[in-house]
Amino acid sequence: MSEKVENPSNSLDMLKWLVVVVLLGGVIAANTYYQEVSVLYRALGAVLLVVIAGFIASSTVKGSTFLTFAKESRMEVRKVVWPTRQETTTTTMIVLAATAVMSLLLWGLDGIIVKLVSFITGLGV
Image (cartoon, rainbow, N blue to C red; front, side):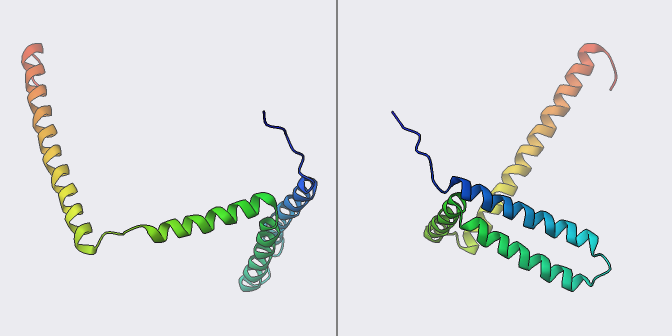
């Protein structure tokens, strides 16, 4: 059986997430309210507040879990053996040729079925 362990930092995390939401909402409100201020200053202020909100969010349990996941994902992407340009080009050409052949086959079958149905029903389509 799993026991539900109460996390002591849960209420602090909730407060941090509330601060993050208020900061991001403040960015939206300030951008709307201060439309007469230069776009450069508004953008710099927005970037600064988003970075601060990001640091606060990363200090929570879910934020640190996300950062760990992102680091592990990056390590896995580095392990991938990416195809060469020639392999990519060859595969693309094969897919295009197969698509063209299948489209011609389906077009021909559609034409045959239309002729067959028009013959059976007597309607000249």
